[in-house]
Length: 395
Image (cartoon, rainbow, N blue to C red):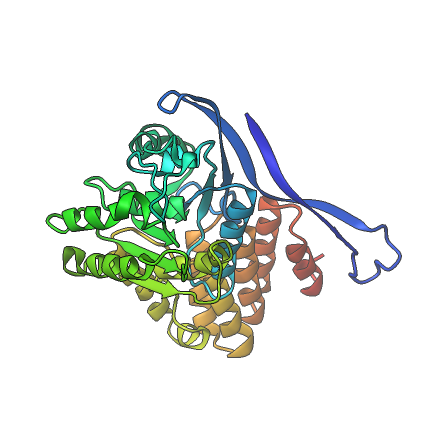
């Protein structure tokens, strides 16, 4: 079963000569919703949503992407994490392009809690916890059903990020501290450290003897004046995590005094993604334009540090190349950058547009025309390639 998640956008075309044209209307897809039958959870219509990066269909079959999995991944959470990932990629290339998967649970109390417990944060019995204790079954569902499905269907890197809030944060940390963690990085947003009398602190102490996880961990939290033990639990837990594996876990924690349990999600998505991909951000435009090899060495070094191959971001390489060509007028550097992008992504029409602009600036109009013609063969609707053909007098 599949549903498209779309946003309806209305706008007016203000391009030259279009005044008085009919209003423009188009649908922008943010992702697709599917369902699966989970024998392990006994759920016949388990929903999940997938958003693919903008370049997914154009960069070729060899391009792979990290995957960000969002617990409680209903439309608001799914769309907001997707937007945070997209913005941090397009606005400075601070994180890589990523596939985002929303995982809404039909019973989050059951699926996200490690043991059965009826005790609320204040120690009183809480009837809403009656179904608690199913986290291991949910971990098995992820390991044997959901994760293999995603990785068989899409071009994924061996780098998974799990995002969880509240009970979702509880589950994320429980998985991170297990003997067989399923993810390479975790974002835990105001997690329920109070659950089962501070169960996660006990799990952290046990994991200290032989920690299995070595990756990125981000945790945000807020004040909880209704829970007298909250601050102490947070301090003790973070100290345990910092000590795990002799510092092998890349940890960052943030306290948001003026956020609520719900509002802290938004800022934590942004900050958490930046942390778990810390070091991905490339050299600045001028430095990269002056020395393109510096840019390519950066991605190679980052890949070695992460243990996963992360290719240069084609969008950022293109930005640097255009600055080298038109702003700094370093034609030899522009050539190196445009050619590197074209060699890595020969199926992107924009890569051919870029090399065409270099050829034209270098006085090689026959090569420029051939490149633009190839761009239009790849994408007959590439309006920018058409505009370059007209501007360069090739029509």
